[in-house]
Length: 356
Image (cartoon, rainbow, N blue to C red; front, side, top):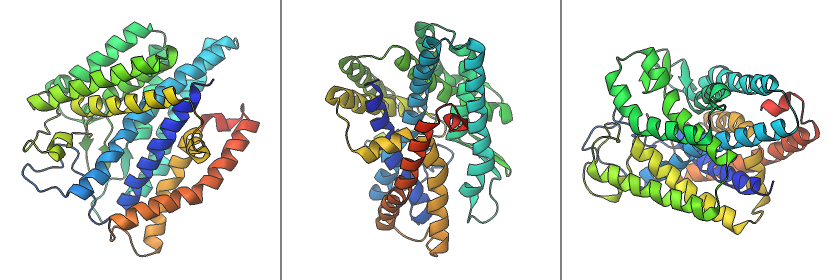
């Protein structure tokens, strides 16, 4: 059980970074969203402070998905040890996956478009869709060996760009391998590459490595990033470097997640997680609370930020100071609710709250 504490700390850390990004979306007039070839025109000037405010938050989504896979593996192992039937385990995974996709469509989509002028997308499939859809896939994939999952995941991350280039455009391609949009629907998180990240997380949860092993994996991933970004060709999802500056090296494609992006972010995550595992200390209590109530916090914080910005008449009209201040205030406001929810969930582990 002790190894769960670093996972909670890591999840709590990226929750803080995520809040900064979404506070920027609510308050920051200069927010950058140039994380794909479709959103960036080569040669466009990039503001350094705005870029790094956005860039530090790139760690969030891969970490969420990876840790969701690890948590799922640990949960399944506990249930198997308790003698739970495989069909019951599959049912619970299915309920959780469907719930996440439903939350994306019903609860999150409207707040993302809140305050925007037409045209806007009615539905956005983002990280909850990626996690929920990946969980549904794991019902079958969890039967594979750890080695088979690792090999398949790596093959997907390396090869999905080639697959995407070979497939015709359309809804199917958007749902699976590449970003896609219409006036009614935007798919920012295609399922297949994010499923590969969950498979890596599942392998981690099934056979947790030592801090040293994890750090070596992280360094290997960063070396792969340097190679792919240095060659500036395949593996960058068409978002290439304009020059050799640090900003251009780090200006990688998240939509869809290029091999360069995935290697960079998972490499950084592995190094930070290895350090937390090596330290083996509880850390700040509030950070652990955030990590243990991540989904609960997620489905509330965007609404708090967007509605507060609208009520104050500051929707996307401020700068970076307001971004960081509003992020801190959102965490302070929601922490007591997260603590109360954690206590309730701990007291009622077999009720509906186990799915949220």
